Image 1 (cartoon, rainbow, N blue to C red):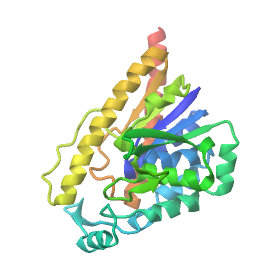
Image 2: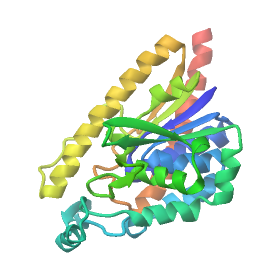
Image 3: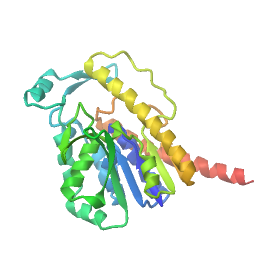
Image 4: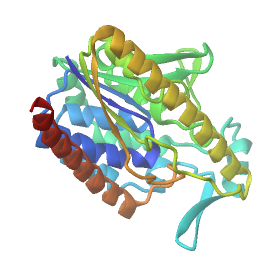
Length: 304
């Protein structure tokens, strides 16, 4: 069984889309299991349907307004670098309404419903491929994996949305008596889950460089400090997931093919820039193509 695992990474999901496009169209890989966290959960249903151009169109045209119903920050560009500043009015408005988070992301839920139709859902649900999204149950302090086979259309769209909700900047969702948030808070790269579900070959797309290249600038405000702190924690979670995934793979004779980003794409994945995301999709495709060409050149030499 071959599985495609896509990590969390916000706007960097465009790079993952490009990598997946080459694996599926360039190499002709067919996957039995698609497993995603956060931005990865947005991609996998469309990839399983092989509607790559459709999801590419979404990722290369999305902006803040399509994600946030109440955006808690402002984007400031200085010397070609995008930074975030607190949108005090929107944050105060959110708290006045009784929200527990700085911003709300109901527009993203609407976007999911618009781009993933009930017909597409039922086609996948009745098919042989398994599509699984990762969510964090804050009430029970557990990570949960939601399969398309176990839910209705409305519920599964909500689980995809919940998987992407990067709290406290995006919505905190109460569902089935529990509070849920971004799957990346518990499992950024769910390789272990893919192996538990029977995968013998895993193609894992990691939206982070293999070696740390970032030396973050001093925080300019409370939000930039929070994003830096969350970035640090998620990086630790991601590396732990990879180590555990490798260990489990060794014990199950599972092959893992890793696709890391070759360079730092952004230090703030909450900023959705259409031009950059279009560029990242193209660079992801080219990176996967080059990587597999290099592997194919090395293998004959090893056999000799």
